[in-house]
Image 1: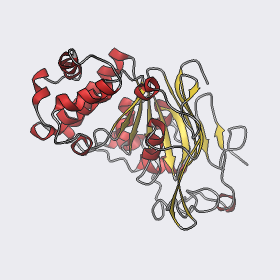
Image 2: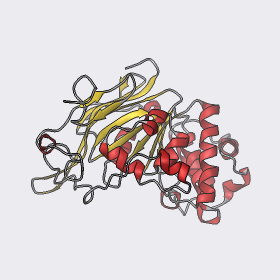
Image 3: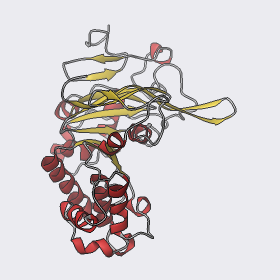
Length: 327
């Protein structure tokens, strides 16, 4: 674990039993890290396992295997019990604030609950701390007496962000935090998250299916496919030199409005079919049934993750053990 890694996930697996002798391999051996103060983007189609990674890291699920290290200390596993401080140090903001906020509670009650559970403030100082959290995310303190349904969707999401900040986290997991919002509101929420990161030194794991968004907010990008990371690189290198055929497929599908933007996109890759079910994972590389560049070995052997530069990794048979093209 590097000194600046605040969160490091190693060999993470999460399997679910969904029927008699039927195993769903939602996460199947994920390695990733989040450095102090950075935003790591985790991108993939629906069913890729990215949200399961988030829920396992935050402690909603117990991992089937692997470790989750917070500041170098493992906080996951059947024999590991997270302390209150460790629970508070990793917080999550869900996709839809309309469902993640209790409609029967006032905003003050929603923000007050984690403050009381984590013993962050006395009962006497609770109203002042709630007002402070609302101000921190750019909302009027007067909102404390309102219910979530009485404010807009973007404001509800900022309340959810304030609730996550109540425990003074060092890592925040943002699970599609803007996908349920209007486009005009998304930019305001993203700008507020960037401001909070700068002011508070937060580390973000930003989960999304929107690659265009990652270009603007992420330090590095990891691509997930069928429970595994298929490519990991700094954002600039990722968009300039995508290596995995699946990555190039995703990038070539980004809508653009000018010819200049079109020229920057990789060659168009047309995939066949849809992402397979994690209940019925194909042999070899999980992307091989859809990959136009697949060779016979791809359907037989699951490729290992190889390093192609100091900061670029890819899981593909095209690249040999030394990181150069195989052959």
